[in-house]
Image (tube, rainbow, N blue to C red; front, top):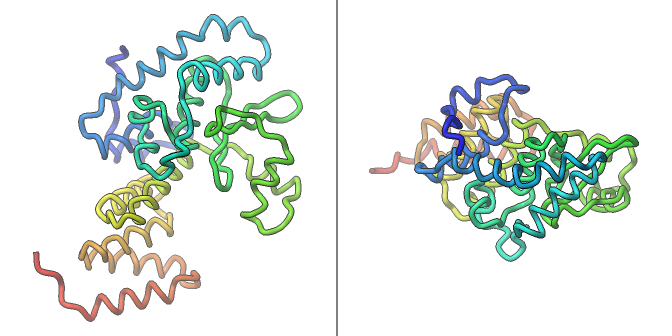
Length: 280
């Protein structure tokens, strides 16, 4: 076990330049918020063990797509990592320690497992923040191989990618648009998407303390993220934290004065301003 693997605090992590943000550390920091006793070194060692079990096999393969096929076979067929179709909205699907323990996850957490194993084996797998489900891509000589980690790492054709993208664009998706949404996501962008998923789950459940925590972490990583600023402010309102809500929502309205929900946010602020503060 690599006992030298340790997590920084959120302030130090958020201050890193984009190119220096380590994906695994970020994913485990997100999990640490929910699991304060999380053993980050053990998670790192588990990924090392998977990669080590493949090292000789992958090294003997020349073509990157075939290397990836071997990795996917080990992860999804032999070890049983799978998309949690039955309980898609279980927050545990987003916490990497749970994903490694249960071998169940959502598209983005399974992609992180794929990418981390591939990275240890010298395979240049990238995350793709595709609309709907998160995907992964592998550069090949004539373009890229796009795969679906939620469904066993299955390769996706260009036609299927267009079909998946079309509901989010409302029209047939031209090649240039498809190529734009297939641009690799940075580790920071991947972590923000993981946190947005968790925020949506907790807000839907009315778990405002956790929802606010997720929005706050997004703002650590992306201080000018207007959507997270609004989300944290609305969460503060639900928790009765009027000063924080006023600060966040006021800044949101300054950043996005013409947002579709600007009038609703203003009404919420006025409404809260007319109430007595809650007693604690």
